Amino acid sequence: MKRQSSYLLQVAVVVFLIGVAAIVALFVTPLVTDGGTAPTFVYLLTMCAPLGFALGVVFALRSGRRTR
Image (cartoon, rainbow, N blue to C red; front, top):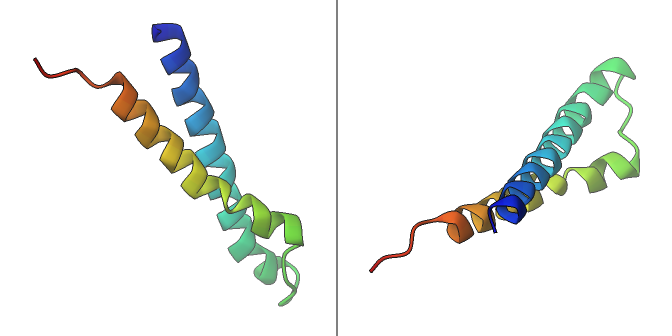
């Protein structure tokens, strides 16, 4: 069980960081392209941030101690 739960944490962190990088790219793109908009896939990748956060919450709930 420990191996699977640490894998879930790694996936959550990677997905969250992809989402954060997409959010940064979303705000940097108009500055670099003189007001142009980011491609559609950047908007879609921003959804990875809340997905990664949700996976992190699932990891925390699954790895928490059980009460007796």
